[in-house]
Image 1 (cartoon, rainbow over the protein chains, first blue to last red):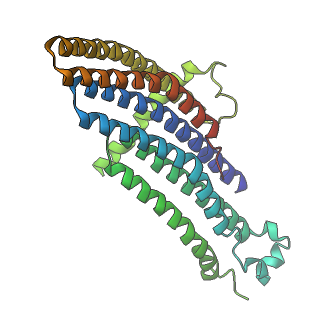
Image 2 (cartoon, helix red, strand yellow; image 1 turned 60 degrees about the vertical axis):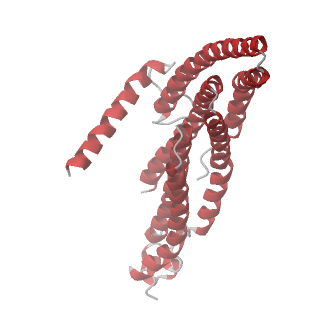
Image 3 (cartoon, rainbow over the protein chains, first blue to last red; image 1 turned 180 degrees about the horizontal axis):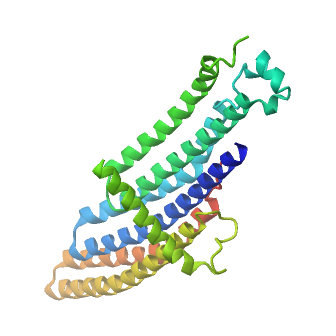
Length: 178
Length: 125
């Protein structure tokens, strides 16, 4: 089971690397594209195009910085809130009889794996939301940026909910029968 | 149901399209770049296509700078010739804008991209 979890986590880590590369590439291309619009606006004398493009460049840079500085900090904070064991599972008499070593306890192992996956999926969702937001800002959309930021909040909320849900699920499934 | 099938089909097509050139760009003949796992090919494809589009857009900026620069010079000369100081002023402002775009594209942007690459975080989980 641990092997399966490590394969999934490895895939999520690779997705993270790909998405961060995507953000860097989109920022570079987006800034160039906006520079071309600035030139076009300057040639035609349309101040609105120039102002819009300059603000878009600023938005692109701010979003990229947020994605690279704030998201890892948020992921670390949310990973600290997700419990890595099911709380009272190690006190269960039946489980302790068959699995005297607490690390071999299947409930704990499941809790550790699920915590890692919850954090990994949440992190990839957050960076994916920022990738969508950066892409949208590069082409001049504003609605998608808002949606992306809402998705980040949703991923954070899911992590916090998981911190409550794991011990409750363990108790509900009977691992806390003492 | 039909929409879900279409979505699955679209994802499969995108994955195949990403995988095909990925085989070609891998320098070591099929293995992903060092430090990257199964999605390493996708990462290389994004970088390769991003590089192509970046070079194309840079060339376009050079052409646009030349055209806009000449237009602004003509505007300034015409404004001076006809005694329209407003047009001459606008042309000078436009030329300053062109210079700023050149600085942004060829000086600031590479520095920004290098900075973003340097702070690009590893997976924090």
